[in-house]
Image (cartoon, rainbow, N blue to C red; front, top):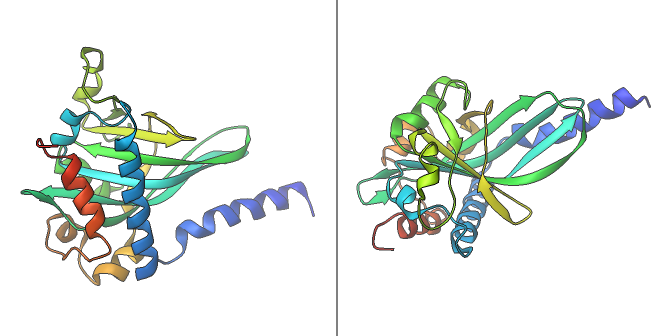
Length: 226
């Protein structure tokens, strides 16, 4: 077996899970993991997303365990959920997938949790509807961390999308330039049937019992009363 064939086989093995069709059970597990990631980030002493940013968020996306890999080239892929604020609560979670690529030289990989905070609904809609790239076509920046926004973070406050990551327990702002965010059609069909991604984010789809803990967590941490 040649080295090239071995690398190709490993690449295929890495990519197959992200393209596999989702079931309702898969969806429920993904929502559960997203809820766990967000709660753990926010419960870390003085290392969560600033309250001011959470209160001003129009939409949020959580991608548990995004995969990073490099096999002569580098790339990222992951599946997660997104939700938008509708009045005093958040929408049922929309299932999304994130992918990107960058040239590299190393062989290896790691798992990274990613959180994206959208300052406007159009910010998320632009990504989902047009498959544009973060950084290049959508104004994104590494988000500040801590309970309060400091004066030194003014530059990031002008970005439409603030991005964060947690890897090996460390939580920080991260640049996701080049990544594409799009609906995970198989996941959304499994949970919502023929509902469009717009109708889900607009609050027109019922929040299933498996998704209620995540919505409760978002409500808890994004209100001024918290």
